[in-house]
Length: 229
Ligand SMILES: *Cc1c(COP(=O)(O)O)cnc(C)c1O
Image 1 (cartoon, helix red, strand yellow):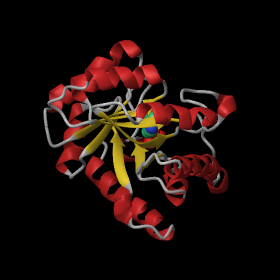
Image 2 (cartoon, rainbow, N blue to C red; image 1 turned 135 degrees about the vertical axis):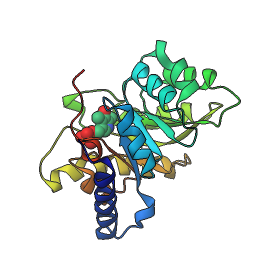
Image 3 (cartoon, rainbow, N blue to C red; image 1 turned 60 degrees about the vertical axis):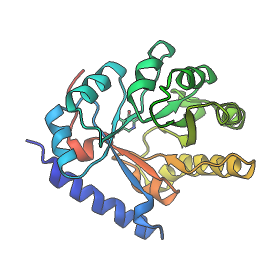
Image 4 (tube, protein in one colour; image 1 turned 90 degrees about the vertical axis):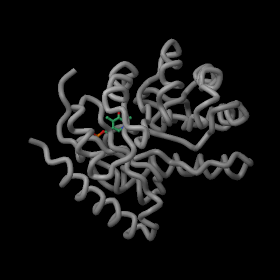
């Protein structure tokens, strides 16, 4: 039995402590509970303990959970790779997409977002590690994509997201996060306002908070180990 309520209390304390150590307001760091491959009952328990924001990385699994949990006070964040043929479900059911890395995806989300809903919040995923290439745009493409996305209707560019390779020590963990922060600073200086840095997971949230993370995406430290796929 995983003790989600206790884990949540503990991780909230740790996040607040990291923020204080970084001379930041603890309220400026939002906890996104990554519920991918976790049970519905674990999500209920987290929600009962006051958790509002949940992250999913698969469209079908995410939609199943949103429907099963059926709680309109919760916010759902899509954080996985988004294929263009699955944008409609995401546009209709999620509140955030952290992983936009092509103009086409943003255009489809913009077109498919129902006008009856609030604007869909968007982050651009940046590949800050270029060589170990996963998803994400390169550092040099950020400004151009941001410029094209910012004017699209029904979606709102909130900021940048990264998912760097795992590093063990604090100082090396900080580097990719610092890179993302500088990119956001550059966007702001060029007249594209953003308020979100989505960065940091169970193993490196402290370094991310030191570099300015406003959303940390925490899975295992809240819910325990994930189920196998
Ligand atoms: C799974 C996942 C997380 C959470 O990882 P943990 O190490 O379990 O905290 C965060 N971000 C993304 C994009 C993920 O896919």
